[in-house]
Structures are given as C-alpha cells and as structure tokens.
Length: 173
Image (cartoon, rainbow, N blue to C red; front, side, top):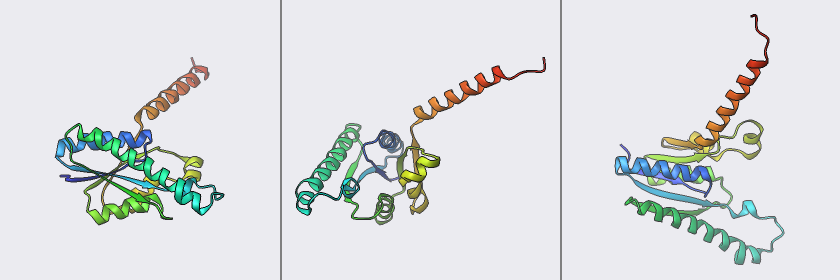
C-alpha cells in the first residue's frame, strides 16, 4: 500500500507524534521514511543583524540545529531497523507548507504524515496552520497527527464543566 512516507519534522511534540505514527506504519507496510526539515531562519531574524552576522552566525546556527534534529530522528528510526533518509531545505521566502507539498510531488511520496497543533479560532487566524495548508495543496494524501493527550484533557474538562452545570440547573422534580 505505502512504500514511501514523507515526515516533516520541526522538533515539536506533535512532529514527534507524527514520527511515531510513521514508524508504526512503516513497520506494517515495509515503507521507507524520509524526514524533512524546513529551515526558516528569516522567521527569527529581527532585521537588526548585519548581513555579515546573518551569514556567519544566524544561518549556520539554524542549519546546525536542523541537521541535529534530523540526525537524532534518523538514529531513533534506524534503531527500529527502518529505512530512513533525511533532507534539509531552506525556506528562502516560501511557506513551509509549499516546500513540503513541492517535495512530496517531486519525489513521488505515497503519504505525508504531519503533526498538527489543532489550533482553532483566533489562534489559528494569527498563527496560521502549515498543516492545514499542506492538507489543502499536497498532491498526495496527508495524515494529520494531533496530540491526543491534549484533546483528552480538553474533553475531560468539557465533560466536567457540563456535569457541573447540569448539577446547578433546576429540575422539574
């Protein structure tokens, strides 16, 4: 069914959960995994660095952090005897989601497995959602992996709030 899985990672908890899902799926199907990290150093630039400082310090730092992230994830997957490759891409003004979709198309992946924070409302409006954008523009199916612990806590709190409100409402009895 699946032979090539693309897993974009950024070091967040949700990207690590996506990595775990990819590992599980790869073991079931015998698929290879490619880990992709998109470095977007300009996102963290304050505009006051000199071009020299950016070239000599800022950019190399982000490239090193990205490579370390990929290497650590690769080691984890290879310890599970999975076939893994890594790719680091610099954003260069493009959205992360565009790089992911372009890479999936170029390398003909069967599935993209991507972590999502599941933001809603104003938070999603302000911060955007690369995962949602990937799901919209990707040329292949996308599996979005959400942090179920956060969702479970949220559902538990919702139930408790509903239960508490129900106890306070008058009844006909």
